[in-house]
Amino acid sequence: AQSVTQLGSHVSVSEGALVLLRCNYSSSVPPYLFWYVQYPNQGLQLLLKYTSAATLVKGINGFEAEFKKSETSFHLTKPSAHMSDAAEYFCAVTRRLRRNTPLVFGKGTRLSVIA
Amino acid sequence: DGGITQSPKYLFRKEGQNVTLSCEQNLNHDAMYWYRQDPGQGLRLIYYSQIVNDFQKGDIAEGYSVSREKKESFPLTVTSAQKNPTAFYLCASSSQTFPAEAFFGQGTRLTVV
Image (cartoon, rainbow over all chains, first blue to last red; front, side, top):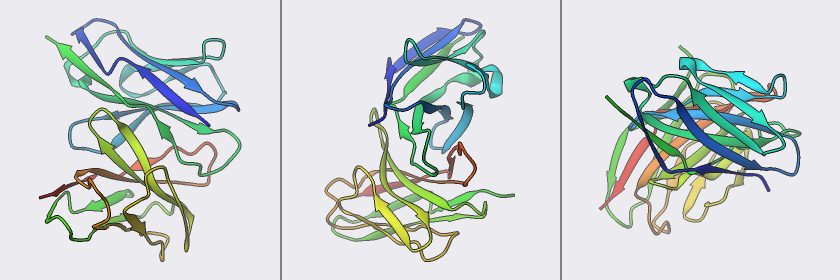
């Protein structure tokens, strides 16, 4: 079975500092991996996805993530945090070989940005 | 604009009553999903449907029911058998392209009193 583990339920950074949100996956087959962002009382919005085309994936709002097979990781980074980045972030995984397989989500990491 | 519409955004019900949450999409997606979100628990899959007139249970299907009579619609009924129904419910859909990310609605917050 596939799963993702997000390390740290809450991360706090200063405005302008590096953002690093950690995600490790477990999968018996090569996975597809996703990062989503959720603002309060809203749905989820896709930030980026890994499809094996490139290990470093760039997404919206200046975020990027690097797929590291040896570490089974897909950590999300942003060089300089902005106040508007404060939200909850979810890592998700799905099986590579089957269409329309539901995403399996981590428990989320809440990012706070301090002025 | 194409998207997923969930209604209502907020819903209050008395304990013991069934309630139906609406989810409609105009993205022409084949697959639709229902997730439940509780604080600190992430998103947990309730039911999903890959095609009209077919659906499968997810990880926490007990106390819920769904139907998929039309491609655009995937309503979720929270029955009185659901022991703790107060939560934020998210509907999503995905296309047949591969890999297909899920597109989400704005959610329905259900409070049972």
